Image (tube, rainbow, N blue to C red; front, side, top):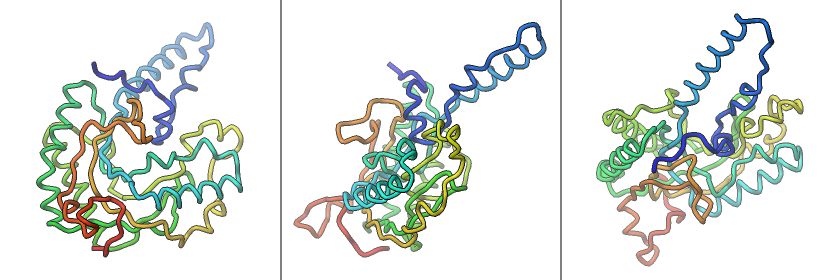
Length: 273
């Protein structure tokens, strides 16, 4: 059975989508037919917009416990400065780099997306050409003082990650699945979003004070070896490890040839590309 779209507003907020709760509680004035019609039109437009909200995404998961612990430490220090931001924090077990978001209406579309990602396994492995893709995380940045993230340092690894994201987007579009985000790809590791906690606005928190995270501008968080790419549901129940439900995953064959006794641990440190 296909999942009911957008049944879990808490997950929307986790991923940065605003709730429409307030708009649904608007009161219409009696005796003003023109205003009623106008509000009805607005409601229809909002419902139509909500119906197209992304409910699936393709991502690179963060598996290195060192990075998760470092993010958690920074989150704790932020809360010491402003405890009101607790609900705006992203759970560290869900940390990921988003490559693409999409709205999949039916199970057939979900299956199509899964098969599309599956077909990308060979091309993505060919893109890496047997090399290990290592993402070094260092420093903290923000978007409009509303979203705070850990930055990926500059290097060839960023070009490879961008090519990976472009390959995913192109393949999905060729399958008839349009990305729900037309912004340029800017990989980052988000760990705090004001949109997760709408009530903060009522408390006067409309922007984040840069002083909250200025101490972490050059902090080293660790390296992530990219081990797989996932198609995840925003709404289905999370797995036991706290990560999103995965409809499909593709892995990288370079991990089969690890220097660590043949192991395939995703969080080992390697030389950056």
